[in-house]
View 1 (spheres, helix red, strand yellow):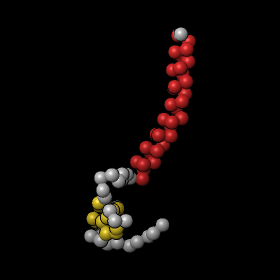
View 2: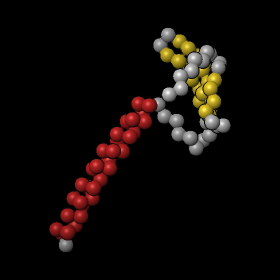
View 3: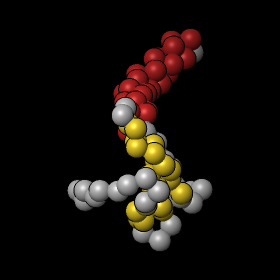
View 4: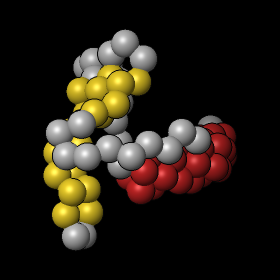
Length: 77
């Protein structure tokens, strides 16, 4: 992990396309701005983790639901 110190209005560049700029530094947090191409997904970590967990749940539940549907159709046949 690279750790940097930046002040208000300073920025860092990631690769050729991404710029992270410090907008303000306040008592309760730091506001940052991110400039990136439209094809780059930017998510807060807690949202990313929540989406990942939901995807895992869905992938575990889907096979069970599919099997239940198939069983119902076979019984009706």
